[in-house]
Image: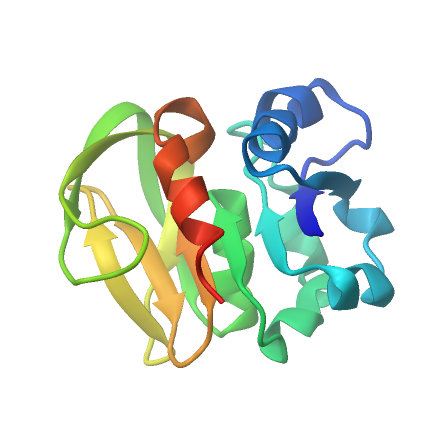
Length: 177
């Protein structure tokens, strides 16, 4: 099972339809709101996607303790936008102001299984992860880190929204084991 986690503040909000549903449809996943996420769900999943949210919907960042399981996980996880910020925070990263709205150029800086060349991506965020020694950076835009992985783990963060114009990145994520 591929678990698609709705990270929006309100369960059943329009954000679920705009952010989680396109991802679930692309990867064949099941959607669950982050407040309903259980240890058995995490254990059963083969891959987990922590979805993005609208620009000002970052309530989940006040609820980081719910994601303590990320520090122990060995299966593939992909955090998108605020999902990447949650991953960064769990692994001790700070967040910095980095506002990007619209299409940006993303420069791939290191070989990785998600993207092998520069690309354009859609962003809608006001902050981003500041990498520390637990983070390996793979791509950047002019404003911030756009793609990273937690060192020696299949836990990835991307600041952009692949559900808008980079579905191939979601498909590539499914091939990570």
